Length: 299
Image (tube, rainbow, N blue to C red; front, side, top):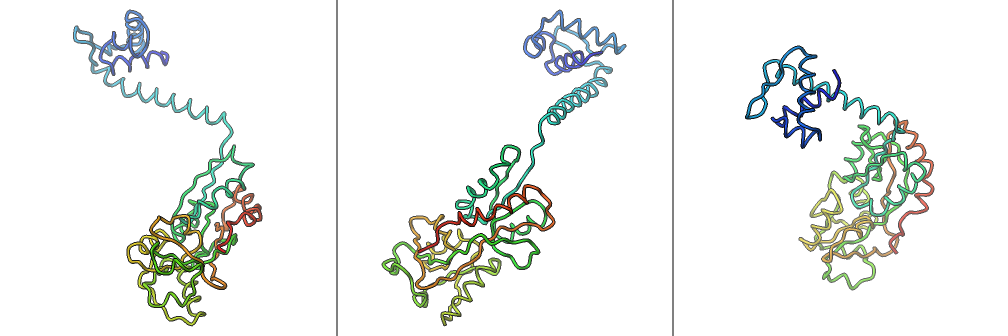
C-alpha cells in the first residue's frame, strides 16, 4: 500500500465521484483511478466504496478506513513540514514594546541596533501603557520595552532620554500667542495630568508645580498621552505631557514649551534581569548608539 492509494481514496470520497476526482483533483484518467481504488481494496481485503449511477458511497469498511487514512496523510504532511523547518536555520525571536507614541521616534533606532541580527531574527513590535509593558516583561512576553522607570517592578532599566514636559492646549487658546508658557499661566485653567496609573508622570508633574509654588490640583487624570490630547480638545483644558506628545497632535491641539528649565521625565529601555537572550545582550551593548540618536529636545 502506498501513500498515493490513500490520497486517491480520500479524493474520491470528498468529491463523491471517480470521474470528478480524476479530472479535478488528481489529474489522471478515470480508468486509471478505478484501478488504483481496486488495488487498495485488494490490499485492505474489503470493499471500501460502492459504485452506482449516482456516484460512489462509503461502505461500512470504507467509513472505518477513511478516518485512519486522513490521519495518516495528515501525519505525513506534518512530517514534511517539520523536516523542511529543520533543514532551515532556526530564526530567533525578539519582542520589543513601546509606550504608545514612542515607536515613532525610537523604532528606527531599535532596528538599527539589531542590524547584524535581522536576517536571522523575527522581531515583533507592540505598544501599550508603561505599567502594562512592565507586566509583559516580567511574564517573559517582551524582551525589551521603551517605557518609564516603574518603581514597583523589579526590572533592569537603562535611561536613554530625558524628555521635557510641554504644555498642550486647544489650537485657539489665548496662550498660543506665547512662544513659551510661564507655569503661573496654568492657574485657573482646567488642568489635565497623569492618573494614578501613570504614576511616574503624575509624580514629576506634582514635584514641578510644588517647586514653582503652585497649588494646582488636576481636574482630569489620564493614563496616556492620547487620552490627554482628547481631553484637551474636548474640555479646552491644559495638560503637561512629555515632548513626544507632539507626534500625536491633531489640528485642534497645539503645544508650547515651558519657560525656564522644564521638568523632565526619563525614558528607559527596560528588560527582565532573568532574560538570558543573546540578542538582548547585544541590544543592551548598543545603548550608547541609541542615546546618541535621542530625538531633539524641545527648545
